[in-house]
Every structure is written in structure tokens, then in C-alpha cells.
Image (tube, rainbow, N blue to C red):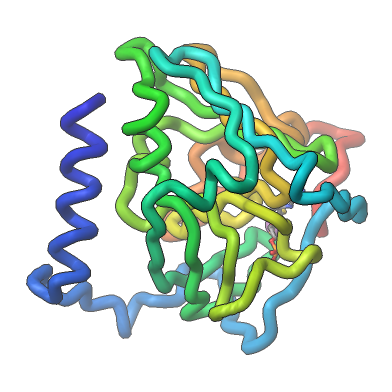
Length: 222
Ligand SMILES: Nc1nc2c(c(=O)[nH]1)N[C@H]1C(S)=C(S)[C@@H](COP(=O)(O)O)O[C@H]1N2
Ligand SMILES: [Mo]
């Protein structure tokens, strides 16, 4: 575990120092079945919880050595991270070059120290939404808890005050209105995953649904 966050951090440091080999993604930047949009669509359950910053808490717990409950001040006192990435929604829109700022997930891992058994992460939100992600992709060097986008505080509709951003997975894995991060060794299903969406959600291979067949009667987002 420790090696993973260290290497993620090192990759990011190399990227920032301009020493990393440039990623040639101009030809394949748009994943299959996606189309580029210039605006930033809003997708959620329709509930946009307004949590006063003095009441806001982020609980990070489960299979970790050092569970924490962060206040807004605590979160902002952690080392700040910024990264520009693309965002791919399973409903086929992709938005390029969103400039996110906040706290890197590897900083969170360093803080709470996930136990060796932790293999999955469940993100829970103030609107009742949740989503499950494997721990590995969370440790990538472009994953963060975002508090700002494009130089401004995160707008309410995009998940204020803080949201997850996991750019290499379909956007339903990026929980807005973030309230809890729980590390687990169990495979639990989140809101859309219970409705047939994929656990792994890799846009590059159109990994949209758990199976070809969406269970009858289940709603989809589109
Ligand atoms: N809390 C919460 N997070 C959420 C959702 C939601 O309904 N509630 N929807 C997900 C889906 S399906 C998508 S596509 C993205 C959209 O993020 P955006 O509204 O900032 O574009 O948020 C994800 N995170
Ligand atoms: Mo979505």
C-alpha cells in the first residue's frame, strides 16, 4: 500500500517537473462511443444538498489505521494538488481539460493509512448517492478530492463543497457532495452499480454495464 501512494506521488512530481514522457493521447483522446462537449453538463439525482461549511465534515474510515473526520479547515490545510484532466460521462459526453484543485487521493491515503486488506473504496455523498471503486484506480496520480474547478470554488451543481474526481473512470464514479470515504475488503455496490452499471467503469473499453443485459425494471441514467 505504502509503495503505491509513494509511486503515485512520484509520478505526479515527475509530471509536474516536466520530465515525464509526454502522453500521446491526441489521436485516442476521445474514448469509443463518446462525443466532445464544450459546456460542463450537470448530472445527478436532482438533490443538491447545501451543507454550511462550518457543519461540513468528511469522514474517512473503514479498513484504515488512522480514521479521521475532517472539517473544511482540516481539508484545506492538507497539501494542495492541481491537475487538468478529461471527464467522460457514460451518457456519452466527454468534457476535455477541466482544471481541478484540491487534495490528492494519495495524500488522503498517506493520512489514514489503508490496511493491507483494503481492496475497495465506497464514496458516500450528502445527497444519498454512493459509488464503489477498486482501490487501485483511486491511487492513480490524477485522482483528487476537488474543491475548485477552472480557478473558482466548485459550484453547487458540480458537487460543492468537495467532490471526488477519478478522470480515468466514467464520471458516475466521481462522487459529488462528498461526505464519507470508506475503505473495505468487500465488494459492495453503489447507487448506479446496483442498477447494472460496471464496477470497473473503464471508458477506453466501453466498460459501461456489469453485463450486456441491464436487469429488467432498473432505471438507467439516460
Ligand atoms: N453525489 C452525487 N455524485 C454524483 C452523482 C450524483 O447523482 N450524486 N452523479 C454522478 C454522475 S452519473 C455523473 S455523470 C457525474 C456528473 O458530474 P457533473 O454533474 O459535475 O458533470 O457525477 C457523478 N457523481
Ligand atoms: Mo453519469
